[in-house]
Image 1: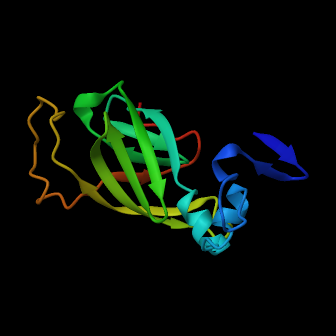
Image 2: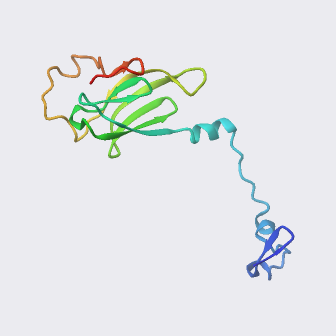
Image 3: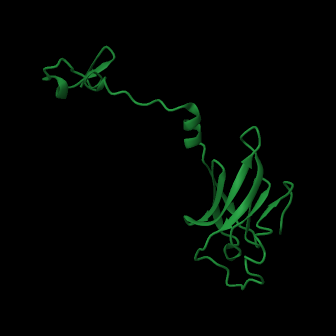
Length: 151
């Protein structure tokens, strides 16, 4: 390989009969699609952070307490946010998913709600007092001041 000006030449293109002696000349006709900046932002704006579940099975994330699983108290979980969905995961297994609403500045959360708890192998050995259908997901999301804690 050797440089002539700015173009990179090498022996593989030297014997071409069409006059294209560089990768740029050979592939110059290929044009990629330039995505819109909004699409690029969405694709690379996913947030992934680590949180530890407290004794009650909640993870504190940006002034919200999100339920993971009481049986995993003290374990580290991943909080993944992509667009308007927040997922709490442990060892790549989803524990719960929430819908999120962003404040107008697109960096702070306004609301977290609509919890969906997933079946997973980490259930607490403690029996539930009520079936989840009876207590319609009340208490699976809590919002408080930065000093708010269930401990």
